[in-house]
Image 1 (cartoon, rainbow, N blue to C red):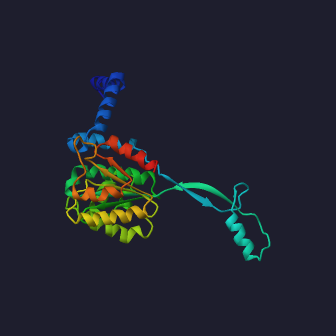
Image 2: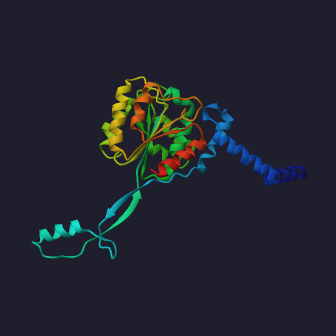
Image 3: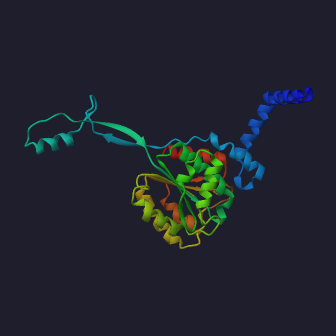
Length: 278
């Protein structure tokens, strides 16, 4: 390297280490976190993609009872009495139980229809972070006119490769929206099998419905009965003047435990906290 090259490299390093430069970059990143994703330029979206790694989803917890030969714990009277009846009233070993917490499943349903296309890439990036953070207890599906499970593709370490893999599996990208039919397909195939039962189900959608809104309401009611909690994330929720009066979202809202914004990285971080506390 020439002396000029050494000087340029040294000057660049000095600029990178300059406190004012560091503060300016941090300030720019913070502004970017609060920008509406739909309004970002391609270069801004590329910069935002680098910030998703700062999101750290923590699975919600569910309480469970484990019955094992504990040295300490609560008396399991039901089990003790049942064992005594089985032995004709003769006393047996004392049975103890201990309450523990286990991670609760999180199911992500991502609307990839045309009206949600400005947010689709960001939603998949968020889902990738979520699946990578808790691969055993997180499931991800895309919804539009079809239901597609993309969990396996999103388990890849590299985010761009994961998004490409997921995108190749989705046949209805930027298509129409039949949320009622797709949610029925999800519940018929996956809900009764246990994915939705007792889970925190997060629906990312603007609620635009080309099908019958009453069918969407029926399936949301069904999901609400199965799930521990239903969270609806709408990119328009945080915008001034927005009112959820369209047929689809109006039919769904009575069966949602939380209705939150989802138009920026900052709102995604807030969503992660809502789910953690669920």
